[in-house]
Amino acid sequence: MRSRSGSLLLAVVLLSATLAPAVLAMPVAGEPTVTVDHDGEELTVANGSAQVVRGTATAPAGTEILVRVRSTSETTPAFLKTASGVVTENGTWAVAFDFDSQAAGDSFTLTARFENGSAETEVPGEIVACGGDCAGTTPSGTPTPIPEQTTTPTQTDGPAAPVAFGENIFLVDQGGVAAIPIAFEGESDSTDEAVVVLGNESDSNYELEAIVRDEDGDGQAVLYVDTSLAGRGGDSLSTSGGDTVELQAETDLDSALSPADYDVSLYAGATRGDDPVDVGTLVVQSPTTRTPTGETTAAPTGGTGTAGTGLGSLAIGGLLSGAFIVAGAVLAAVLVKR
Image (cartoon, rainbow, N blue to C red; front, side, top):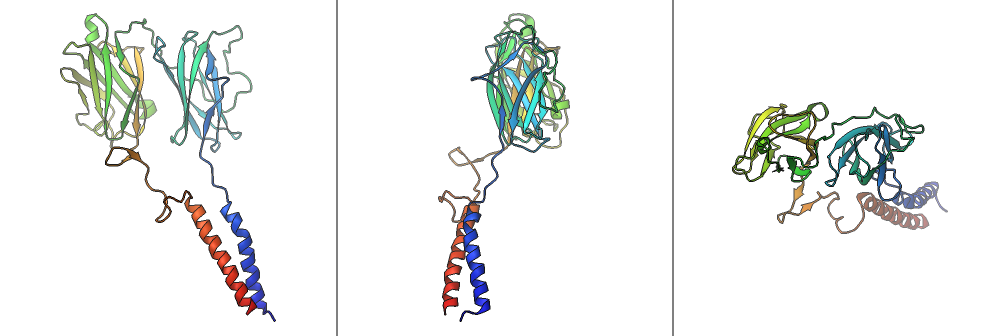
């Protein structure tokens, strides 16, 4: 005759064995994502004011979305615009830009990312001619809340800029030295020097202004920025051989320059003007773990003995728990039978 305690034990074991597959199938939270709404292969906006860019995001309501629009190398004059949006309860976001100063046919790249950098997307774009119904205010149906549109200074010089960046994206690991190449292309006396402004104190809590001079007359210079010394009273700036740099102003910092995207603006001559002749972005990345061969590797995330299984810690734990439960069920059945 089966005892009452034995029957209870068997029921508990059988119930646990039944629930084991549910534990193994328990869903894991998906990775955060951000998207930009557009038709076709690229985003199109009109050369008018209050042009809305919108999208979706898998993030809690209130999460900030940082949006950057940067002209491509073929577009003259160059421009750089930034704005921030907020994820709504419906998972949508929107920002508004003023493209009134741009010409139809100008191309750009738009980047949207979470403030913490957990997700990012990039889409190409083109400006089209503004029709008679080109919006002067944000259109109805725009996701809210939407911040006020951000007006960013736009280059007004002619196509032949006297100075220009050799490239527009400058990558560096935090604590490393960034290289910013500058080409001096004009023929006037003022084209042997240029003002470089890195950052924006109101947006990124850091700003640096310096004058770079092409002293050796070879038509180019490279400005080096030591991100470990920036804002800390050291010699954070240097140039390529034969050229010079003169620091004009810099924000004081307590530690190395933080990982973030910093605007870089270039002005011809020794005086900072109203509009830059070229714009770029300094991207300070978080330090990475590198192998002796120089390849970037991710830090291990699993415990000992899980490598090569292709299963995460949750799945491994679930399998072990399931095996224990099944074994327990067999043992309990034997004990009850006896």
